[in-house]
Amino acid sequence: MSGVAIAFWVLAAVAVVTSLLVITSRNPVASVLYLVITFFCLAGLFVTLHSHFLAAIQVLVYAGAIMVLFLFVVMLLNLGTPQWFDVAGTPVKFAALVLGVGFVGALVAAGVGDFEPGASGPAAGVDPDVLGSTEAIASALYSAYYLPFLVTALLLLVAMVGAVVLARRER
Amino acid sequence: MDWTGVGISLLKAFLVFFGVVNTVPVLVWAERRGSAFIQHRLGPNRVNIGGFTLLGLVQPLADVVKFVWKEDYVPAHANRAFYVLAPVLLLVPAAMTFAVIPFADDIVVAGRQITMQVADLNIGILYVFALASLSVYGIVLAGWASNNKYSLLGGIRSSAQMISYELALGLSVVGILMIYGSVQLDDIVHGQGEHLFGFLPKWGVVTQPLAFILFLAAVFAESNRLPFDLPEAENELVVGYHTEYSAMKFAIFFMAEYMAMVTGAMLIVTLFFGGWQIPWVESAELQAAVGAIPAALLQLGSFSAKLLFFLWLFIWVRWTLPRFRYDQLMRLGWKMILPLALANVFVTGLVLYFT
Image (cartoon, rainbow over the protein chains, first blue to last red):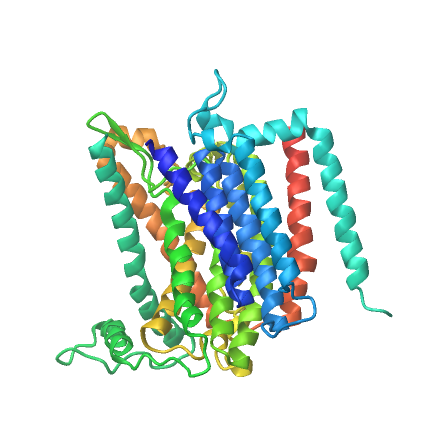
């Protein structure tokens, strides 16, 4: 097995196990931390795909900022006692099992068993060191995809203004 | 496999880590001496070896002995696993950040090009920010796992503060990235070797003075140092998130704080003060004049001198300025630094476009 394949299987296994632990652990703070580990593994997978910029952003935004806010909220609410919105009833568990098995079945049917990590590199003529670099992503975003980029930026701005309006104290 | 290359990388990683770890006790000593000097107090003058206090340098040794032998106490109501995990989570990112800082220019020895940084990543500064954003977990978890209301308040304060100032930290650097056209720290340092108007070093502080001030403020907030040490404000929160920690666990928090200080100072030097550049001395000419390895050592000396100045600045500020109030801190971060950083990016863009 090549180094990339070993890295892929280790990271993928850890990601799957920790994401299962996210939904099975009783302690919400532990759930948040398991999710952080999952995000780390995803960042590692991006690195094996030569997407260094995306990996850094994954850690910076998801693991470093969003999950800190999650942790913040979980700690303040002091969850842990059963709440009305806990989905632990037997019918829900059964439905989750059916859906999960169905999802894995669909993946196998789609040919996930033949997958070989690192077998297909970047397209011919593309330098793998340049592929996911900051420069490559920036030049793609600001030239070929400038319109979607601007629309996304506008959407985020609208959401931000909305959040400020909602959070503003009544005068 | 290129075993010599692997050996050189391991050696670099070891040397950098060794250097940084050993900066910590020296900094603690400098902090004690500095506080005594600034506030007209006595400072460490009792601990001695055979009557010699060595300017107080024996004090860190005594501190270490005390940390190791003190009772390692875990409060009864603490969440034990997270309580033990928290200091580790704080120390690991703090110790990993140095990997991308260049300490000298690349040298060629025996036909092999050696970069004077542990890892030359093409994401450069983003790696530093990604790791810096993780250091908040240690503080938040320490506060929560201690199961103490002062600790929890400290942890919550720090999470809000660090997220707020991370934005300021990232945005204030954007102007620098635009001027030097790279996110890689060695490119930025190389770019700072040029001169403006023939005599002024093209350092970041010359081209981006506003960004430097904003970055400096954000670095102080990110490393939880006075005047922004709200997470541990001792008159309100005892000492905040590490109230319940003792012995080596407390020492690790202490070390992580000082390492964060070193990281901050290294970033300031690298981004705004030319890194290893010696003013008015071209790196290539220096290497030709004195040889590759002495040139690298001279540049390392230049870097260290600048670094030591900024570490002293951290101590100087801590013992001079009073602490901010929490609402003042938030107002400064969101209503002053953030808009100014955005304006700085805009103006830099305009200037670059028209020149």
